[in-house]
Image 1 (cartoon, rainbow, N blue to C red):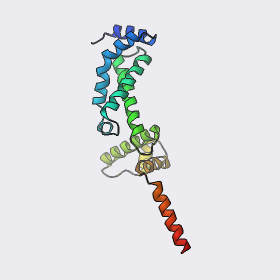
Image 2 (image 1 turned 120 degrees about the vertical axis):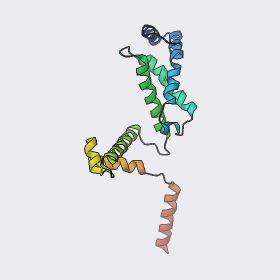
Image 3 (image 1 turned 180 degrees about the vertical axis):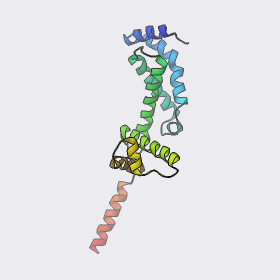
Length: 173
């Protein structure tokens, strides 16, 4: 059921005041929006370690949060789409790696790689760390750190232990 702007505002005010029926009505009227946002997520999100059901669950939780926090300065759909996409993206990022890299660092890595790609297309060659740093207004060390983190591969602690034991055994012979 499509709601008018006035109906959205009235339901949101009632829902934020604790009216469960208004919350449910507003939620049901906008459930399709949450599903649409999940459907339009980039391929990297869809191919993550989370199932589509997990992504939908995160989107529906975000929809409830959007209903509870929305202030009618702009259309609800605009606000909710941003909240839902952010929540789903964060869920994917939090569950996408064996070793969890904090979300802000993952966002930095995405910015660095996007800048590298743009520079590669415009220059016709790989961009230097200095060029990427200049575009992002960051230090070359900051860019280098993000690139190093993005390329790290997890290693087994057992492998480290085995390597140290073999070195110690070689020293004693």
